[in-house]
Amino acid sequence: MLLPLLVSLTAVSSVFGAKDSGQFLVVDGVVGGVPKSNSFRTEAVQAEPLRSFTTTPGALRTVENSGVCETTPGVLQVSGYGDIAANQSIFFWYFAARNNPETAPLSLWFNGGPGSSSMLGLFQELGPCRITNDSSGVTLNPFSWNTDSNFLFIDQPVGVGWSHGTLGVNTSLAAAVDVWTFLQMFFADSRFSHLFANDLAIWTESYGGHYGPVFAKYFLDQNAAIESGTVSGQRLNLRTLGIGNGLTDGLTQYAAYIIYAKANAYQVPLVSADVIAQANTSWITPTTGCRDQIIACNNGGSDAVCAAAQEYCNDNILSPLAGNYDVYDVRSGAVDPYPPDLTTYLGEIGTQIGADVVWAKANHVVNGNFALTGDWMRTCIPELDFVINSGVRVTIYDGDADYIVNYYGVESMIAALNNKWSAEFNKQQFAPWTVGGRLAGQFKAAGGFSYVRIYEAGHEVPAYKNGTLQSGEAALQMFQQTMANKPLFST
Image (cartoon, rainbow, N blue to C red; front, side):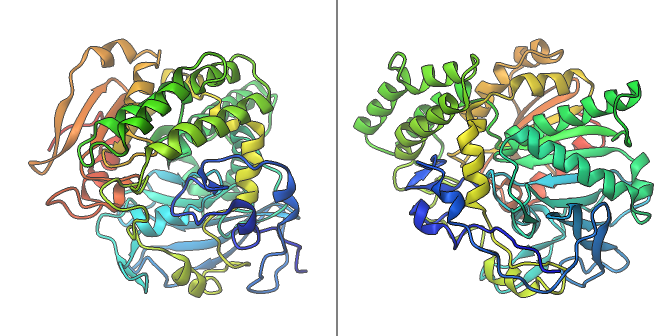
């Protein structure tokens, strides 16, 4: 049967009033804005189907070796759906490791939004192929993260990218539940069951500053519940968490917009002194200012209190301080053509890789559902500390040309962590981080925790060249060092 589907971008563009150029969606002209009412939910229409399909709850529907993207001889790829319910289908694209796939770890990749497709990471950043600058096709990526790791790109929550169905997820925790359900199905499939014993990693970026800690903690909590006999299922062998330019804690990260607008390595200042002064006032004003609204949110605040904090802070601080620069790479104008758009190319390959519906880069209904629960401003520092203290190796990275989740804020968030490695980490000074003897950034590492600020990179770090390094070369070194269960180090 052909199920009724809800989709987003073109159907509800009139509600939001601006074209999105990246992972944080634009609502009524505000980056990361909050819809004024629930009307956006009724604006959605049925998605345009690519083919007729029948869901198979509890099982996978797949296409093997489509010939799209990964063209390395002998490397398995599988794309398709895990139907977690009759009316909820999660799209995934699996690529075996180019080297030693039987014993290689399995890495999961999630883009942010909330509501943005993980195909951005696959085709623009770190996958086996990369979109060409004219968006007409793809080329093989020699610095793909599936070089030594099996890789699973997941479009989530339901309704994002090629995933489709009832749009019920509205918090990071609810998203974690669906991802866990999907992974139980994935490992139960005979083609992937051997990966169950291998190490598992979560890699994510942007709103992944929420997804990563919340997903990882949920997996660990589920593992403990399985061991105690209160939950049935397979334990997930989680060993690694990586977060790129992640929004994790508003209280530490929002003041950094003011700092970055005044002082960064590329465009100083981003806006006039008057705009900066007004943003600072919006930050410090007692009770009604951004800072106090975030505090109220995280001091038992309701969904409405947290949603109001998101709306106020993004309208009065995040959006105006960007000025006329691209929020994902301040080296460019207001709309940066890089990384190239995927829409046309992904519209051409859907049938070949087993997609049921037309691909959409972002889903505004999913985004709006999250906004109305205030998930955005709820801190994930406790979850991140829990994961680190549980023995999971964690690497946090960012590009220094990114404004929207800039390194000042990420480093401020890291300084607020309170885990078993924090004291040792905070005592250290930054050291140069080199890749093959070429300077690529600066870093610190203590025990199972590492952080690197990568030079000449925007929001999607693996997309950039970093000086004389090739696109993704620095990011691959970071990934491989982390996946080898080592702290970051220079080469």
